[in-house]
Image (spheres, helix red, strand yellow):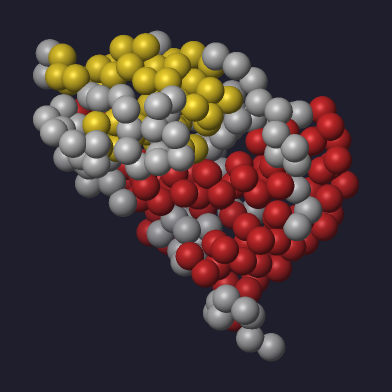
Length: 228
């Protein structure tokens, strides 16, 4: 039978792996993950071990080379068992795709290999206080500083805030004259000036480790830009 998303036979194996993980690992832990508001560590560890964290990473970088249809099918399987795990995974793969599309990130290839190997968890840090639901229109801005940039921002909520190794973030470009002229950059978890300012309590998603985050004059090198 043809899958509703018309994924290929080879990609069906990835969906079946996700279904097995959802059934055997996510479902038994889902209630406790939500009740205790704890990161879904068991499920994320298995996803990393079986290569699904690199689902959409190119095979040249050690990934599985899956497309968006396969991604949708895999996330759907995870979400049937644990919303928090599905959200963490969704944000990770989305951020990894932004990294894969980068044109100026200095260590992009090495980072993609770490993502594919399950050694690096990434996420998005887009929504900002003041931008409301229009996360593609950031309020923060990159400011030129000694050949590089600095930025200050109040990110409304960041999935995997305590657990992610990197954050794909957005800000207005230094020369922006309007709210749509944004740029994308990468922030590492140990960057100076990055702090978490509160917790998160969302029904059914308490384990996704989503939290507001403050960037206080965070340094952004040219090599950290995902686009020029």
